[in-house]
Length: 134
Image (cartoon, rainbow, N blue to C red; front, top):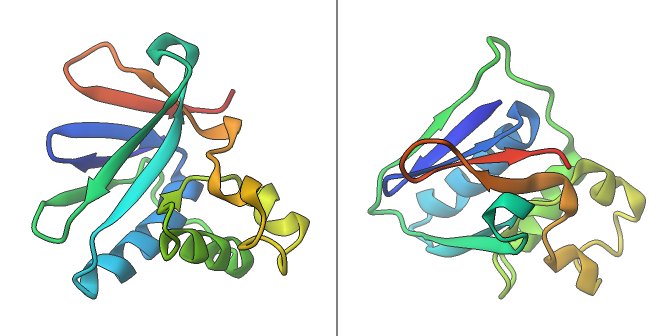
């Protein structure tokens, strides 16, 4: 389980999705673009969703638990990039969603909603949150 820390808030994601999110986020921030990142909350955190406005001027820290980088799925990366470039912003969605219909991913309403797989719950300390599979 890796983590993304942004403006004193930490959200933990599985290393695989975190690697894909890192690529998309860094691409946007390198161009000086601000955008929205959204994910699902677990029942303990209200069973809703959370979003953070990412801005290039605010420090961002990625921490991976594994020693080796995961392989990158180009279809999933393309789907996440389309999401980040949409008016809805970057939505953490599962890899299986990108594999279902690569040509329709950017057009369906479902692609702009956070998937249940990446729920977030409050961590035991401070403002940390943990993304877990549900």
